[in-house]
Image (cartoon, rainbow, N blue to C red):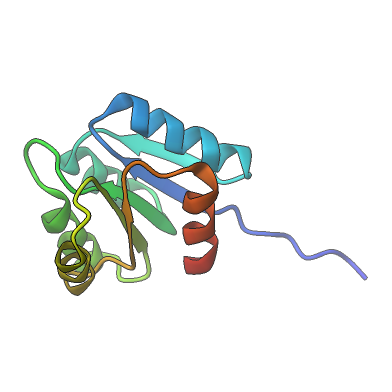
Amino acid sequence: MKPELQKSINVLVVDDEKIMQASCCRVLEKEGYTVSSADSGEAALEQCDRKSFDLVLLDLKMPGMGGIEITQRIKRQYDWIKIIILTSKNQESDEFWGMKQGADAYMTKPFDGSELLAKAVSLL
């Protein structure tokens, strides 16, 4: 019996903090995901228009277009994309609000790579 071909999982990491962006990309690439990155909401939306993503990791606080607006716009156009919000806000009310706006998961910074992978696997 022929092994099934596995579809490559495409992930977009959106964070204006270059160190956080690079760290997330490294963890995901090491696990075999195909990873792209953007440092603004506008760049993220442009990439979503050009490429089909399965998962977006999205910083909540960025200059310009914020994470909630980006979440809402992605979900309106590409409802199949799963979104994990990354933020330093750690109040339960913040998490509830983010999920209510369309996020599929919420992670408080700092976090470790295994936590990120666990969230990604559970959503995908």
